[in-house]
Length: 216
Image (tube, rainbow, N blue to C red):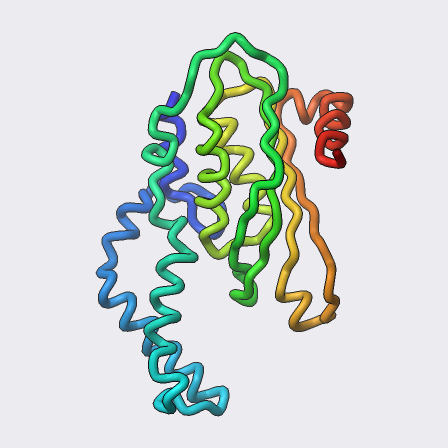
């Protein structure tokens, strides 16, 4: 079953498998990458009218380079190792729902944060996945340059690929700094996206029950 998720190693920001693994991408020399980011940050500081050599900014290029290594770590995450065979046979075919999974991501359009909560349900066929793995799947896709719509579908498709369940439902709610800090400058907008697969796509009553659970 896990053979099917090998393609997820190649998922990049455009959401399509390209045949390469994240580990191939990770072969880029980290020292060179860090130095390149630091150079770029110094150029940005200079071109917005700042002095990158003043005391308060001296360490900023280094801090930003290290920050990107952390918050964009999803590119280098191996989904097979993430799942780590945490699949368990079970005689259970009612919905499994995991709510209120916090996530933080970066919008690919302006490289500003968006953040919120993910709510996930699936109906097992013959296996369930370890509870901690679902938040880890969310985090793997969140720690990339993203758009919320694509991230919602990627999470659903990976759970569907790993578990081959009867149905998967994923709902993400997000607050986007690109609309709060710039543009329309609205303080409290929230965006909701959903992907329904299998029975959740086919059965309106199942979808209603899932959404009712979220409202509770």
